[in-house]
Image 1 (tube, rainbow, N blue to C red):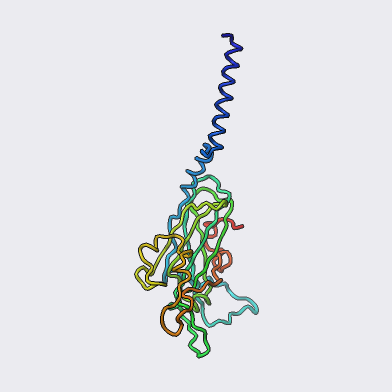
Image 2 (cartoon, rainbow, N blue to C red):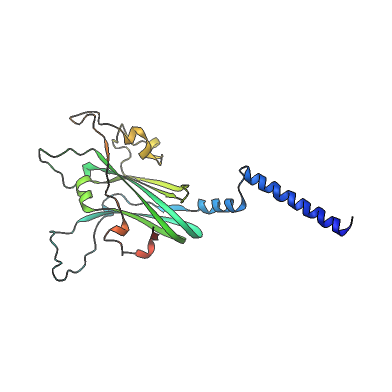
Length: 249
């Protein structure tokens, strides 16, 4: 066989191998790049969940007032500040979304309306918030949400917090739930060992759509969805340890 024929034969074999590989990829097998990305995604992890309790109630930083900017409030009020730490392994991550789901116990409200015309509060109120970070370098980072003082005072403190790390394509990378009321009466029964391990507790009908079973409020919603949870960038804590938080888009 001449050198020319050998080269033609080798080239034909290479073409066949390439087409075969393309067909395998088209049929659903992952490319090397996809597999590498999956390995990097697997290393995006939540390393520390927010604390639940008095340690998360923080007074806002105070700036010296000048001119007519004198305070009218009688004292400093407490914000609910909930800080989650996560880690990325890729040199640069283009985009990462953090979904927050927060359930508050209204029995923990500090200021209750006891007037006869006051509307009764449900046992729990529920908040959600989505924050999208961009240009995330490799390493440790923080994501944080806050509840303004009036929400803490009126609707109580969190007893359940869930965080999810999600790609811009919607792929769930990691998710964890912090609890303070395991074994305490919760919705229809208890927040049991079975339900607490389900990241999507907010999507469980028997929990999120449960009704009060007894008393004057029988038939009313056990949980009320509300707005009010804000990203840290919209709070007085924005400039505190600001390098720990990535750009938001």
